[in-house]
Length: 136
Image 1: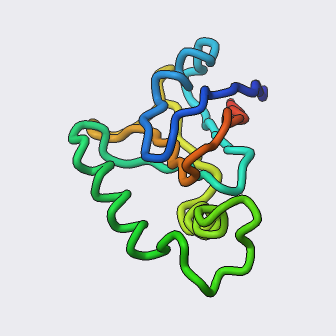
Image 2: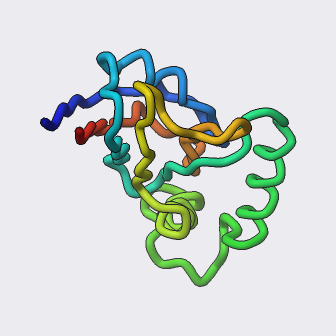
């Protein structure tokens, strides 16, 4: 059996945002075992799993990615939507647009300190859509 739904996240602003709760609130009761794939339908944001306890992890992500792919760099040509446009696309490709998580005992089988993050790379991004697909 496959269950699929699409959800829209509100505009969250630039940064790394824990979205585990929003995902769980939009799922039916999960099967005893299976998989869930979460796919982000955008090219200037990403989704990942990382530590959900210490907020400095989010600061460090932001600092590192800003140094790795700085905004306003003169060699970028794709800048029609602003100086954060091409850097956002590169960062999104580096992190990725989907994650797959095992389902065990009707729950997402995440580690104790793991959470699902929306990594928003645009200063003025809008709503973001996720496709949630449960395989059992």
